[in-house]
Length: 280
Image (cartoon, rainbow, N blue to C red; front, side, top):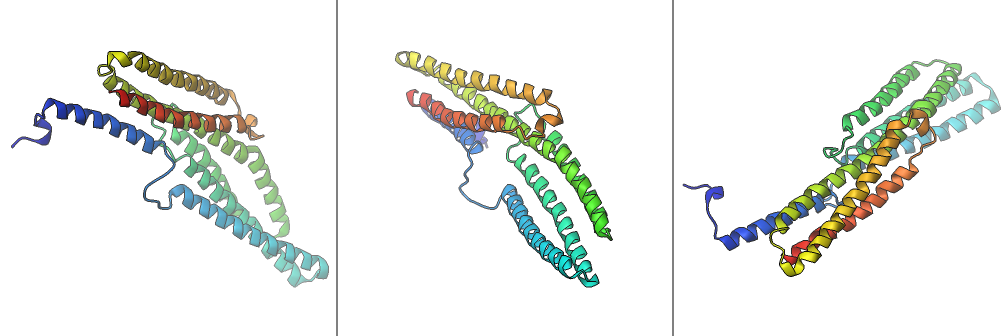
């Protein structure tokens, strides 16, 4: 009994099937680069955003209790008020750690929204840096849970603040910037693969009367590739040369703008990929 793949279809059916395979490839590309889904469920990124928001809400509550207990102690100066102030201050300090842990998890999930397979950057490298920061916060949290005095809270709070400003914030800024450039590179890689398949299919099927139009299509596609390839190379050079201090001021704006503009360019390029199929 012959398999489906071994059955010979009439020539016109083979042509139709081939054209539909190209269209399906294009549809797959569009789905990969789209932010929408036909069946919506909570994504890991959305869950991480919800968790971060929840921890922020708890931090706000802990901060309010800290303010109230501090004011009570400053007013009455009793031992009971002092113990309450210590307890609420410690709660506030512990919750600060939980906020940063949820924030780092959110950043890590942001790097998971594409698979990096067509980027020269490695997702594991980005994760390693974020996980290193998370380990620092976890270790600090364990120490904070054993704190017995307000003086210890003040000392450890200063250590945490210094680390956040000097290491965590710059690391997060660099990770997000790298992810932005990697995502553009990955999307461009998908665009390149799809356009090559369409071009291979179309080049022998374009009518002579449409040959100039086809060449213009090729030129337009090539311009998009070249433009983004050069811009990606420039930003990769910037990321490669920058030390961690460069990101202390969260120099993400130019890269974030580049990612947004590149996404608009690639979104518009999807229509260009469709165009040539209308002339086959």
